[in-house]
Length: 530
Image 1: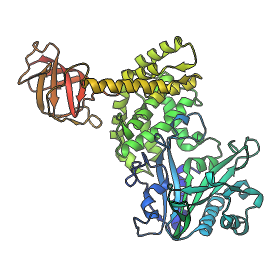
Image 2: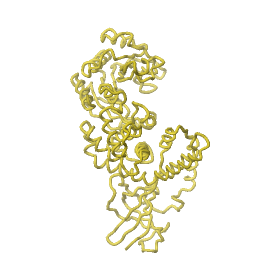
Image 3: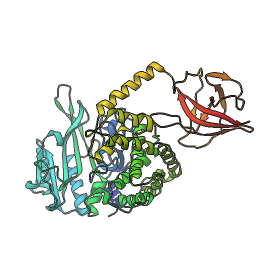
Image 4: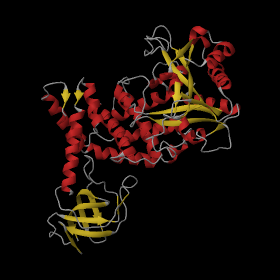
């Protein structure tokens, strides 16, 4: 059963049980400022569960796109090294807002996975919260699961809460047994971290309101929130052990291999690239743009991590954007917005690749030189900072390289170097050692959508002095143009500024560097003609 069919079967099953099929919400949460990205299916329904929002339905089902990279929920460093970690994944879920509760939720889950998906009942294992006798009895007496395949688990794994106070309740989880040939034990045993028993579905029963003093007050209208990872259930239904062997990833890994001229399809770098293109495309379609802060910086880190893995495979030219087409083929039916925005997304990725390719080789040479002189097993904080500040290497990218070579990184030293830079910047208050220009102009940046545009010249400077006109050979290569809008990327966070050409009807200005002062983009260079 292909991933598209699994997704559709899940949604249509719950639709047949009176659930409203609700479209995936954006990866940028609109109702929760505490989250960097949407990381679970219930995020878009949080206000419904809290009683702050009402919908015209009391039952819902979704296939929610999720990202766990950055912030509290961060799987980035594990991607490519394990069988089931991803930056982007899809969460299949069904929800009850004060409608049905434990008995129906458990019955629906069992019917779907054993009858619709056809998983053998004897291959399934169940956990319940240690004090939840109600759920235990439903599984053992009404569903008929043998008691030796039901584990009672403590609050750490089987009791969910939204925060220190508020809605909370016990969970019941369904596990799949891959068989005795794979090491690992049932949940709750010392061997539970093995790969034999894999969690495929978590059912959360929100039945209490936790008070400030810790008291659990029963909710007047208990609710249900469930989540099943599409990639995990697809691996089981497609008869493979690793998520990277399911149909979507087989296609993406093949595309990554072609784009990097790699013949070894088992290479972990291909897994990283295949994983990262999904996160990048969906973040871009949801309006996140690469930058040096917040969500934009997480996106930039993911893109550069993929580029570095391509570089590791020998690819020295932009390649990552080429995978968008394959992703659209695989997921465009379920998410038509990526097909509709394909050209824009490809261009955004390509431009980001071109920027990083200007510095990645020099940065790798610096790192290799440092490693050649390494006297212990730790890359210094100064080297980490230099790679970030000068060559645009996010620190986790360098840490990724260190991990491949069984080395450590001095994160404390990196933070100290970063703090020194901040203090120096606060004292200096200038760009590249030059005096600040006296300007109130603001420049609109268009570089993530366009490589060229029509603009108005707002101000002209030679050195730090404002002037009305610019005369060829009198600017000494020290001229600066300020425009009302620009596609030129300004130097920031170790990424060098764009170069290029600004033309009028009768003049041509060569841009040798682009800097930023506040909200003003400074196009530095000289008048070539006119």
